[in-house]
Image (cartoon, rainbow, N blue to C red; front, side, top):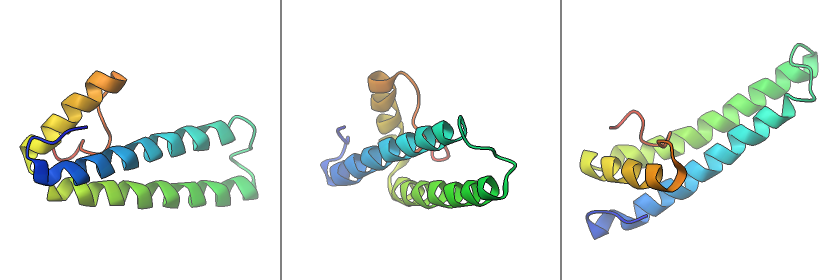
Length: 95
C-alpha cells in the first residue's frame, strides 16, 4: 500500500495491517458460531467478548482513518479493492 503523500505512508500501511487483522478476527468469530450455541449462557458472554474485541480494533482503524485526508482514504480504498476485490471496512465512513 502506497500513499499519495509520502508522509502518510506509515499510517496507510498500519491501517492496512489493522484492516486485515479485523477481517481475520471477524472470520474467526464467525467460525466459532458454527459449533457454539449462541443462546447458551456461555454463548452470550462469548458474543459480548467478541463484540468488544471487534469494536476495539475497529476504533483503532477509525482513529487512523480520521487522521488521513479524504484523497488518501480514497486511494487506500482503491488499492485495497484492487488487491482483495472488495472495499475496506477501515475507511468506509471516511470516503
